[in-house]
Image (cartoon, rainbow over all chains, first blue to last red; front, side):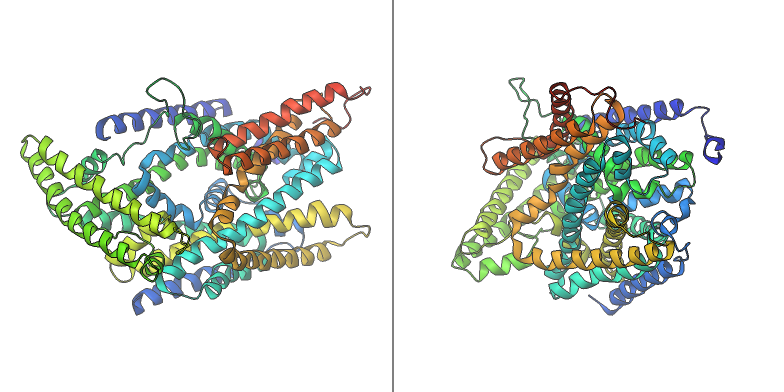
Length: 40
Length: 579
């Protein structure tokens, strides 16, 4: 089937993609926390 | 509006309609009309997902929200990236494998026809009404600001997009959303640049952040934990409600709402669907942060320039024409005097801060003036709410547009107004397409006794799209007479139904021991319970943020489903085929 042959871009597995999205979220929340500490 | 603004507005809108019609060629069957022949690349899926979620109110309300309540609204989106991952793991593979047109088709294969029909009906009810409000919400703002006739504004807001949505289906929706979002982002970027540029010459971006932050507008992360250590459940936007409530809301919206499911089903493969969703998880939070930051900067701008007492002029006129005219005049007079003082205090604060001098005294004067102007604004809002006036005391949606019209150069005002139309069209077009697909696939085709040809299905689908378009405009027309509380109720409508719909899907995916009868009963009981909680919230018997209704609804269906299943007489195997 065509769908299974589609290569995952950037990372080798979807699991790596999911971890990447979670890491970015954690970094964003940390960044926002520091932003709040700095200015609010 | 100037003639240049009118030209920019008209050219942009005609351009989008023409582009939509130009991109309308699809196969004359349901695959072509509702899923764009399943040929879309991930980036088009991404833009379509974003264009569907971001309505006009997103770009109007969010800056106003930051102006009044600070940037903490961004936390509402913290659960979204996690939801994208769960949908990629649990939902996308099944939808693609079964080659469904609607998410609810799967429920018949997993449970039975009544569960599919109930869920699809709940979707049609909530999405149909909320799309009507999506037509009305930006129309009433434009109508109030420019004195346009509300009925004609509704027709332009909800009617013109029908041309390309009916002719081109999902493909036209996706391609126009792509162009719409590009124009929206360019316009918002220019507005952001202009607001910083309009600050006094000695006030830079970091100074502006400092000013905004000092008055609590940069409160991006909040916890809602009180001083005594307890949690404030009625607080709408905080880290926990955003992560938990936002996760459930996003799971329901992206995983079970056909207006979104229909977008990523247009992808040419499972991989492209997943990529579109994951990219949405990466860009949504920073995008909302940027939009809210514009609102915080508008707030800073109005520290140096007198801000209106109330941003909705129509309501101001109402008060002035009422028995409270004298009170309003006194408040306005005090407000203007305080604003002048505030402008000098904030400038003194910035000068002292930049010179490295002590700022405490200046800060105290400035904050005191701000508190007093806030109090006067509250007094004026109370007048707006008086029975004799009967006005809308919430001016959040008018703040950003008021700034745009008053301070942005000619041409850019027209572009920003065009953005309101385009953002609305993007989400309304996707909603019409999904409403038509559910009506056609889950009801007409499912219950039709006659075998329908591909051509007949294609033609009927166009009529259903047109019919839903007319329905939404009619709802928008009625919304004008509904009053604020009902409109507010319709706005939280998603949270009233989403939790239960998500609960049904969670049972379908993860609890294979529960059959159709149990989940159907559980859904009915939980929905009634959610409506009861909503009634208690409205009566102020209990205090609860509406985001919490999503996990309660989803959890309710799971728990009641397990309970009912344990009571029901056991069959040899689960009732329906399990995927």
